[in-house]
Image (cartoon, rainbow, N blue to C red; front, top):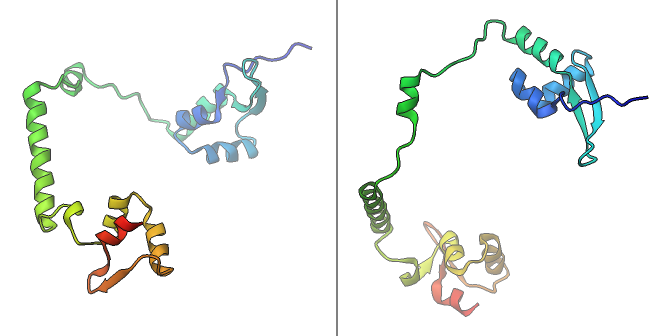
Length: 164
């Protein structure tokens, strides 16, 4: 008996995108026998995949979106949407803005770099040491790392982190 070729049928993801629903909805439609589903073993990879009949998918798409027409972007709009190659001046201006923003953020934090601060928050200690915050918290709770409780949260001495 010759085997049917299901290579023109749609995968679950393709069917979901064509109809405009989730893959779970496609599974539900197949369970309710509203869409024909077969399991096909791909000859190239041997992988087994659920495939859906393209005519059933088209019928359900039309039923769910009867008035939907294809949207075509006018050609004059497309010219405006095409990205322009960045100029060197534009790149330099963007770089200067980024540096300004970084320096403003630094000033908001007291103007002192993390490497120069005496006490660090858990987040800053994690950034400074490269250790996860969870590990630093565990070290503090096991009293292997000293921390001070302040009104603004816990602070860890930078020199204690360097001793680890």
